[in-house]
Amino acid sequence: MTVPAGTYDAVLIRWTYDGKIGPASIKDSQYRFLAPNAGMVAMAQIRSISAMLIYNDHTKHGKVLQQIH
Image (cartoon, rainbow, N blue to C red; front, top):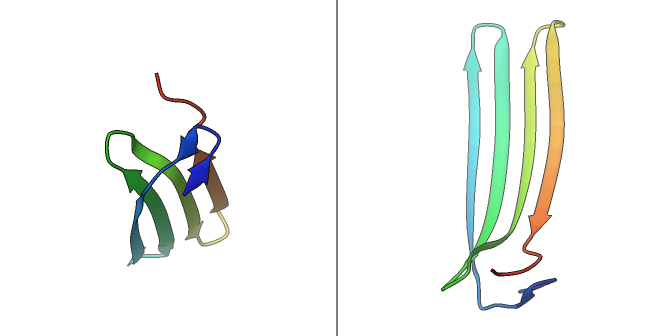
């Protein structure tokens, strides 16, 4: 995987969550790329939370490693 901080041999870890409590529901998917001696070099998250008409959150996040200190 190539990110602004360099090129890494990374593994992908993916997890998903789908749950409901009463009128509220959540769906979450996360993808994380991990490299030896660097940790997480990239990630993506897609999340949807709904609680009837009161609260709704539909977000997408992406991050990449800029540099190693």
